[in-house]
Each structure stands twice: as C-alpha cells, then as structure tokens.
Image (cartoon, rainbow, N blue to C red; front, side, top):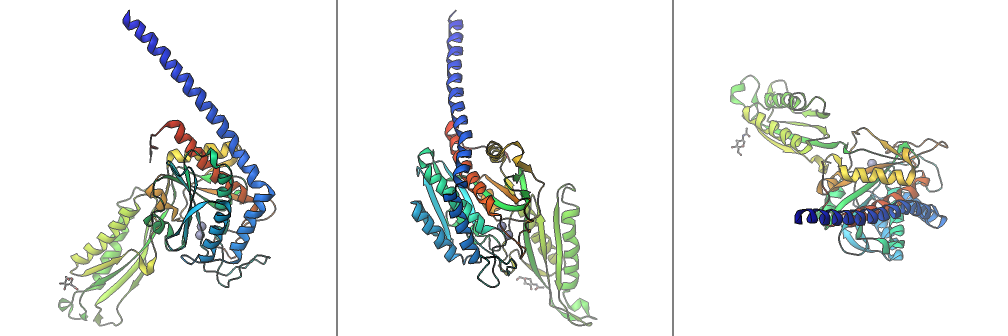
Length: 439
Ligand SMILES: *[C@@H]1O[C@H](CO)[C@@H](O)[C@H](O)[C@H]1NC(C)=O
Ligand SMILES: [Zn+2]
Ligand SMILES: [Zn+2]
C-alpha cells in the first residue's frame, strides 16, 4: 500500500516535472525560432545593411596583410566604441576581442579574420584596392563587416542574452596561423564553443554549407637536412653518404600513406624538393629535401611519423637529420573538424531562418583554414555562406577577379548573432551541463 502510494506520488511528481519542463522548453523554442527572422530583417534594414557595406568597402580599399591589420583593427575598434561594446586590444598584435552580454558564463565566441592577400586586384570598380599588390581576395573584408553586423544586432538585444558573446577579430589567417596566436594570447579564455563563417561562391545566396566532422584538410610542410660526411665518390667507405640516406628517406615516406593509412581516408605525403651534390665524383656532405602533407585525420601523428621516418632512416644510414615542420615560418594548419552538436544546432538554426533547403551538406574540401586551431581547442563549427546569384558569376577565392556579393552580409550577420543567442539559450535550458563533444 505504502509502496503504491509512493509510486502514485512519484508518477504525479514526474508528470508535473515533465509538464513544467516541456512548457518551458516550448516557450523557449517558440521565442528562439522567431528571433532569427527578426535579426535578419534588422540586418537587411537600410540602416544596418548600408553601414555594413560601407565598412566592407572601406576595408576593401585598404587591404592589409597578416599581422599588419592596424587600420582594419582601428576601424573595428571605433565601430565597437560607437556601439558601446567593450573589447580587449591588442590581442596577438592587431587582434580585437569584443564582449556583449552579461559578462558572466557561459561564453560563446564568433570569429572573423581580417587579413588580405599579397596579390593585385584586377576588378575595376569604385572601391578597388588602393594598395598595389594587396587585395581582399578571400572575403575577409566581408567577414569583418558581418561580425560587426552581428555585434550591432547582439548589442541591440543584449538584455536577451543569457551569457556572454565573445567577438573574435583575428589577424593573419592566410599564412601565419593568427588563430593560434590569438589562443596563446587568451582569446578563448572561458569560451566553451566557437562559430566561424566563410563566404563562398560555390553556394547560392542565402544558403549555407557545412558538414559534421572533418570539413577542411590539415595542411603542412616539411624540410629536412640530411647530413653525412662527404668525400671521394670512388672511395665511398671513407664517407658517410647522405645521397643513399636521402633516397631511403624519400621511399620510406611513401609508405606512410600506402601502408599506414586507411585506403578510404585521404592523405598526401609528397617530397617535392631534393637538393644536393654538385659533381660526378664527389659525395656531398648533405642533402636537403622538402615537401608537403595533407590529411583530414591524424594530422599531427602524420607530422610526427614524417619526422621519425626521416631521422631514423638517416640514422640507419649513419647520417644525422634535422627536420623543420615550419619551413620559412609557414605554420601548419590542422584539419577543421566540426563538432557534431554544434553542427546540428547550426543546421536547425539556418533551416528555421532561411527554410528547409537552405542547408547544403558538403563533402570534405582539401583547402585549409586556421579556424581549425579554435575548433581543436574547444568545440567549434565552421560553415560556408553562399553568395552566388543569377545576376553575375562570382570568382573563386584567391582570384584577382574575386568579388563579394554584399547581399550576403545581412545573412552572415544574422546567422552569427542567432547562433550565439541560440547556443546560450540551449545552454540555459539544459542547466550547467557542459556540451558533449561527440567527435
Ligand atoms: C651526428 O651527430 C652526432 C652527435 O652530435 C655526431 O657525433 C656525429 O658525428 C654526427 N654524424 C654525422 C654524420 O654528421
Ligand atoms: Zn584565403
Ligand atoms: Zn579565407
């Protein structure tokens, strides 16, 4: 009897709890699904749209290379000042980290890159690059405008924020892995998730693309000096021949992909440079080799194996080898891996915002992105925002004919802002559970 009573009580209690939770979550869901469209309307309003376009054009006229984004950074800071958004500066030379919301956890980050490319613009238009040999040909001018747009939207709705949105404006995406320097400088302090958006000409305007797991390849370089002891080519036993050692190294490196990699997983190890020796009858002191690696998974393990194969093969052949994984300061970029939960959140959000067919599932892409450093440190999601429309054909990134479809900017701003808001809302509705990284 007592047991029965207990069960009835317990069941009623659980039902009450269930009702309470479900009514609360449906209230949150309704509100959350209305908000993105409001954000998009606001971002498309002439007031915000023209302002974003103005910023993007100003940046386009004055492109700055990695770690030289001083004017870009200044413009960002003056806009944040006007909005009353607090920020940290400098973070990694020119980087800016803004904060909107309660100033309390949870912290969720949105990221834009600021740097241009060392190339000449060939597009003739009113706002063509004014700096010879420098151009925003990857859309980072648009990325900054979109993130400032998001800042404006978020500031406008700051009383709705159930935590803090961290706005990361990072330098040097293209060559020097500015993202890594930003992390080292503490940009991700307290941050538990991060979102990044890249404009693309491969997807129609108003649509987005991404995938769960590996989206972009890890890419890196290596250079090695293999040292022996030179001497007469006809008296080899008085020498330590680095030519033989280097030959063994080159062949052994080929086994990393052919014998140690799942054939269904894509990896590349290429030796593309081999220098040494200058005479028919002289064994040289050393040989230099160099090349590149690409991988979607096990990138750092592949780097380690490359290093190991080179040094150990050299040792077998009585030579010494030194391996440089950052030749000429070229930073390796790990693969960009999207967190499963954030991917699902993103997909749901863009469908709410832009309709069922607004999300395109893409195959992995061999290009690299230093956003990968953020997504390696904490759960992250990187996506592409389409800008292709019927009116004209948009050139691919890093082309001297590259242009940004400015109509995409409000989409970027609204997606950024609503992703952050939804992340914080989800978090608040789930309590203090930390997000599970399913990857
Ligand atoms: C390799 O390095 C060791 C330790 O520095 C040195 O003793 C040896 O002579 C070197 N061998 C060659 C072939 O340079
Ligand atoms: Zn680029
Ligand atoms: Zn880019």
